[in-house]
Image (cartoon, rainbow, N blue to C red; front, top):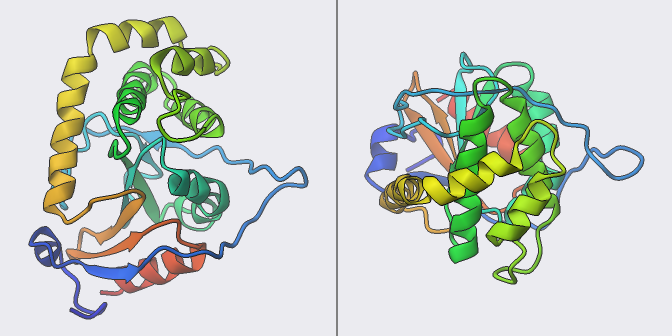
Length: 242
């Protein structure tokens, strides 16, 4: 299937076109100290998207009216997810999300084991805590967790460490997170497992994986790995004009 003819139906049948694979070169736009100043807007939804993804409980970055959607399957323990968010996402947000053309739905896919699941559940707890009153606080927490990323399954993403990191994030209640992890872990794990099963049905088996989707045209394409922004520019243009 060519890039000019991707479709939601083909994607759901497991025939989605791959726009690119893991890359090693990145465009960055950093401040003088090497950091990125990024404060994107977030919103929530209880709808099932045209792609078939239940958006309930998933942080969505950008305008609800955006014409292009990017679905981002991610794991807090994934080093390439961290690299994407540090080196590519700021420019993607600046050029496509902030103008209102693209929105990004974050979908947890705990690929690397038990601590990945714990971090994914914590993310759901934090989003549930802040999405009505201060959804942007989720981004502060999300970036704080990625900033603490250590070696996979070394314990850096265990419950006690996640709680400690959370205590430094304004607008997020670490005690409420602890209670949520105690009381709602099982229910949130079930939701995450359902999302993982759907990802597998889409042919997604690792992180980061992205689906760029045009709901009006039912056109979809995938990107895998920590891609440079040029790949996203190309994907967005092709799917937008499909």
